Length: 255
Length: 255
Image (cartoon, rainbow over all chains, first blue to last red; front, side, top):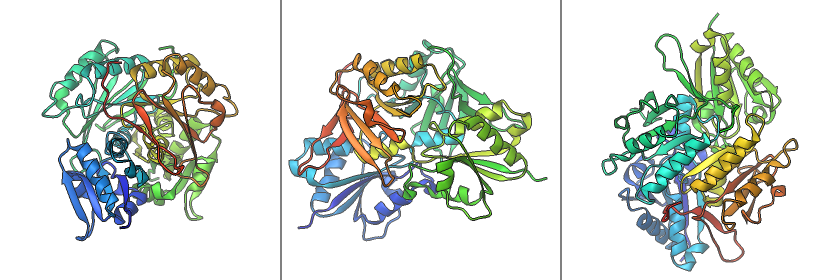
C-alpha cells in the first residue's frame, strides 16, 4: 500500500482572485477534500474528488479522519477559509498528530498559506495594521473567558491594534459587548473601531465607529472587528466617500 | 487631464506561486511601479512600464511621489513584499495623503492584500500561530526602544505568540539580543523560538531553538523570528526530519 499525503490549504477570504496559484495547485492534486461545509463547497474539483464535510465544531475528529485517509494512501487537502494557520485547521491537524499513532509523524504534511481575513479586511479599510498589532479569537470554547479579558487589557496597554476573530455567534452572543466594555476601561474612547463583514464576498459590508460608541449588535459570525490604537486615524474624504482608516507608523510617546 | 489611480500591492513572500491573481491583475494595469528596489525588480512588466526605484528608508517621499504620479494621470502600483499593510507601504501612503493637498483625497486608492511574511513562515514551520498572537516590528526608527520593550513584556504576559519583523540589520545590530534578554525575564525559558529566513525564496532556511538558548546572531534582515507561548510545542519526527512547530488551540490556565 502506497502512502498518501496531507496538505492544509488556506482558501483566502472568499474572493477567488485572492486564492494563490500555490493553493490552487495543491487542491488540484487532492483526491479528497476535508473541511467545514462552506469551505469544502467553495473548492472547484471534478466528480472523482471525494468531499468529506463536517460541522464547524468537530475540528479534532476531522483532523484525525484526514490523517487516516492520508495513511491509507489518499492525497488529502484539508481546507480552511483565510489562512489555515490563523484559527483554521492547521493547529488541529498537528494536535491530532501529536496525540495520534507514532506512524502519523512519517506522513508528508504541508501547510499552504493564504490571505487571512484580517489582512483582507485591513486592505479593504486602508492600512489599520500599520503599526504593531495582535490577533485574538474572542471564542471562549478553548480558553477561559478570563484569559480573553486579560489579553484584551494587556493588548490595549501595549498600544496594539487589535483584530478580533469569532467576535459573535448564536452560541456566544454577549462576549463582544463585554470585550468592548472591558477595553473602555483602558482606552481613551476615540480610538476607531471597524466592523468588516464578509470582505471579498458579494455581501461585504463595513461600519466604522469608535471604541466608546461601538455596538456589539453590529457584528455577526462573518465579521472581523478591528480596534485601533492611539495612533489609528480616519482620513475623511469628499463627496460622501468612506474615510480611509490607517495606523500611523510613528509612535512618539511612551505607553 | 484625466485622473490616474494608485494601487498598493503586496507581492507575497517571494515565491511567485504565492502572488494572488488579484495582485497580478492589478500589476498588469499599472503604467508605473514604485517601491524599494528588490520589490520593483521582482515584478514582471513590459518595457513600457516605468520603474521608480528608491532606497528602503525613503517611504514617505516615495509615497508622495506615487501620489503625484497618480494625480498626473498615471496608473501607479506601489509594491511591497509580503502584505503591504504589515510594515509595508500602505500606511506610508495614507500618511502622505493625510498630510498632503486636499485634492489627493479624491484619488482612487486601493490596497491589494498579500500573503504576509509571518503567514508564510508559520506555514513553513507547521502551525505556530494556532493561538492568539501579535506582530511587532523590532525597528526603533519610528518608535522609542522603551515602547518596543514594553510591548514585548506585555505580549509575553498575555501569552501571545510573538512574531518579530525587522529583527536585525547592520544599523540595528543589538536590538534582537536585548529583546531576547528582556523576554527571558518574563518567560519560562523552554518556549520554542524559530528563525525563519527568506521563506518561499531559494535560499530559505529554518533554525529552531528556545527563548533560553536563542542567539540573535542567527538572524539577519531577511529573518522573521517567531517566539512561542507556553502552549507552543515541537512534534518530533523520525529519521532526522525537522520537527513540526505548532501552538495548541486550548489554553487551560489563567495567565
